[in-house]
Image (cartoon, rainbow, N blue to C red):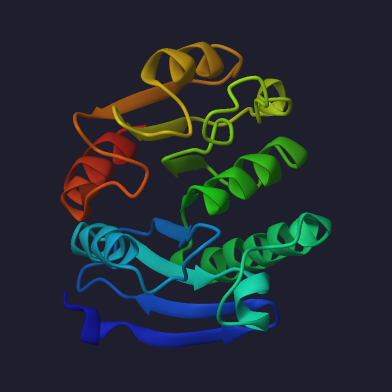
Length: 209
């Protein structure tokens, strides 16, 4: 499946591209972007295409803050609206896919996915978290883990060894706070942006969750 095979998908608070597999297995994935980008990044396209090739219906979508404006970071006061957009995306995909639905995102998008999962424990079936922003760069004391103890579904974290938002040792300590099963996939030499080449590994390690 190529990028051109993805079809535009839009509902209230949901806007993105739907990758439909030739041989769907009933599973679905909602994947979204970080604070400084949108759903059309090379990383998200590669992840979406890899999952679709494996039979997973995949929706890569723009968060509500990015639907409002093409550039600029999200506003903290509107984070709940971004999570509502993810909630509606999962609901929409569950109608189409019919079986398990995974939820994930890169950086800020992944953080909002974890917060939604903490708020509603059974909303999604597993999490895919690309470069979770554990803390702001050079501010290790400002951890974003207060909700980790409420996450009750399996989670795959994919993290680079050169990510300034958290070291591998810090990530391991943070994942110990999650009572559900977790998996940490370490990408040697990668920074916060990761590499599109991680996509097949994400499929393999999440699909067996």
